[in-house]
Image (cartoon, rainbow, N blue to C red; front, side, top):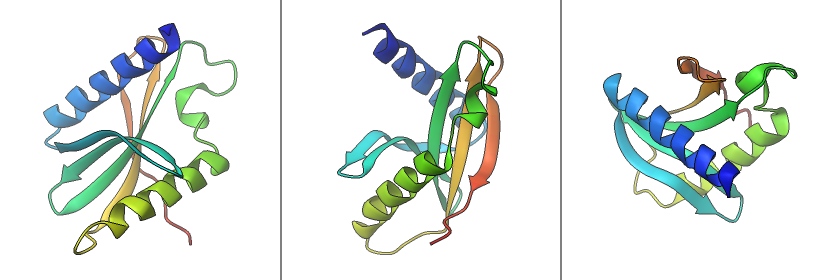
Length: 116
């Protein structure tokens, strides 16, 4: 339960941060059979799929390093599922908001690409 509350708080913090950067919120915790997309935002004409990672310790590389290739594949599959429901596919990118031990959000734009 605490982990869920911390995750929801981190997502709310990340969403608020991105809104202050000029992005518009489209969806939060969008789920499908492939997994969940934490935030879906709009940045001009670009649809942005955002993975929010929170780590209280940096023993294993911190929050940003926790977006593994396996996690990236799940996000890509979920994004493809989301996009299949749209009339036309907009330009897209995948960002990460890394939150480490109460520090300022680290926004990694184009954190990874759709490679396949």
